[in-house]
Length: 362
Picture 1 (spheres, rainbow, N blue to C red):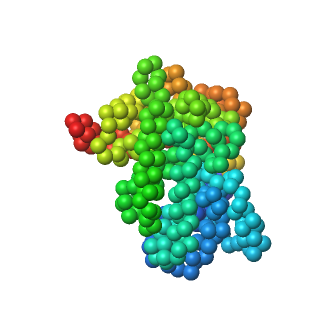
Picture 2: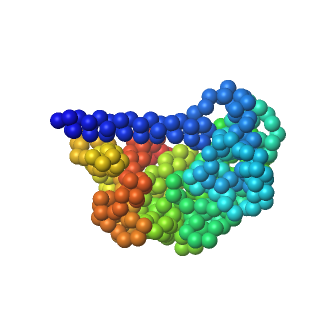
Picture 3: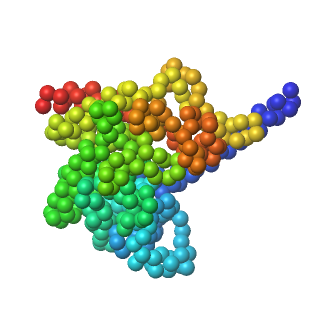
């Protein structure tokens, strides 16, 4: 009994420490700082210090590298290295929120502290987004182009959707961004956005004659679903498709083509949803943090991250690229380190009735 009690206490302590650590990481992450700090904070000396870092990390081409904690202090040696890297365009990207996060931060800074450096950097970044677009309307993961799957049209992690949301705020003059570009750039933004919508409509996958969803990435030449990393095979993606449909649903006066795309995607979401299961994390007896699926009739629907192009069957992959039928057939590293299920399409289903009522007869 004592041994059982000791083991239980140990697991509870580990769980608490892990949760506390995760909370600390989340509360101090770059994305958290950008999106949750109140307006007044952006006038503080700390905000200005971070803004200096943001300016240092920006490449002369206009974009930023990804996965940088901009708030971290820099030594003089590190600052000098960043100055030398400015002329190197490789590494600039919109993956994992890069460039979009920095633009948002600079806009919030400029509203409180109208430093022309912030405005100049923001406009340079906006021009970067416009220059990075393919003629077919899509955007690659990296610009300048980085050899490999990075050249594919990238919906993964909402990369292209995030770009288009920025452009929408710009040409609709919503004042979401405090920095206003000239009319020529505003017009370019509108044109680029419309081309992006055309690309989205062209890449929606047709399965047995029926429109469904989208892959996380599409070949930039054929527009067909394409492979990315070894475990990210051509497929239909519940998560990425949700972000795309939410973007389409935000359009005023949607065309018949846009309406059809939305109706079709919603029908596909209804067809592919998984009910009665809840995904959760837990600690094993050895203290390993694992994922599992638990029967729960009250759980919100789930959608698989990857589904077969032919029949929507969910599949899972390890780094060897071999398809498995369940998440539990792949190794612990990928099983626990990747999002195999998503609840995001539920947001589409919740918004759909009101959208349908508003636009179906217009």
